[in-house]
Length: 386
Image (cartoon, rainbow, N blue to C red):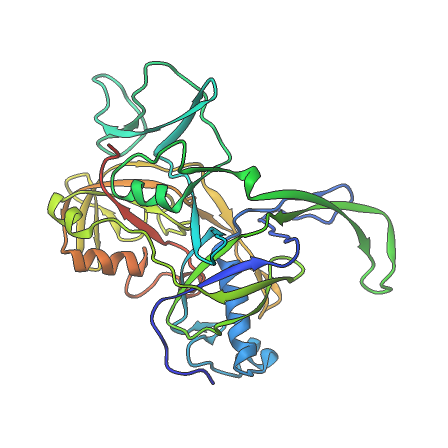
């Protein structure tokens, strides 16, 4: 078996083939179309890395799937161990081997174009104007202060430097800190043919298409794991059809905000870095509406009031359970990039660090399997973007 459990580890995962990164929509019927989701849910990386650990440690995969074997850090399918995926992002590898992460735009950043030039603006929490009514339950609403209305640009990613600026309370540089999707991957549509499971022969008229994702050279993912020793390098089966990807250990410094400054200021933003599977829908675990009518966070030694939020339309998270050989339950999730503004913050820098390390999971944990898969993770950021 592997040695003692190490601290946080980072792995650069680079596709060796096209990937089928399927979402939650069924396909396979005649004329259907299977779309790919980039980046995939963190559960895809968690499953690939856990399978690699089991193979590396010589564990009988069938016995593990049936719950007959315990693994020191992975536990059992019904009772996960200490393994936890804490981050999963797109990344770009430089010529010297260093890896730089790429991040989805937070929901409070808006990129617009004036002629050929891009600009970045930030939503700001404001009290509703007098007489304005809405169904929102928070005391402030996110407002975009602009003189001229423009359509927001899409298909853009923040560089690691831009993400660090954002967390520190600065607007990213629109010239140097944005990357277009077209520089990262292309879509390659593939035609599939329906097969009869009994005879293993082609069924007439059952053609469907599926999107394959072809990553550009040097583009992959960074996965961060705590609570389990991982092989330093190796090959993974990633996404639909188990396409090949390489995994190698990398030294990576995760961008983060100044927690001492946040604790001193008594306010901050919380930005989801993976989808949020919350028991209260859009509202993260640990928040509750109290007698004063406000929603308060009380979790892992941190107390704060929620004053504003910008949460895009909910998405549905599902997946395939290899151990049980059946679909996972479909759950509504707050999307990656959702932003929550907190004030009246009462916490030490150490407590803030513990909260960020734990994610939006209580000590009892609402779902140990989804926690291990990397959901409900977030980053702390300064309250405003200057």
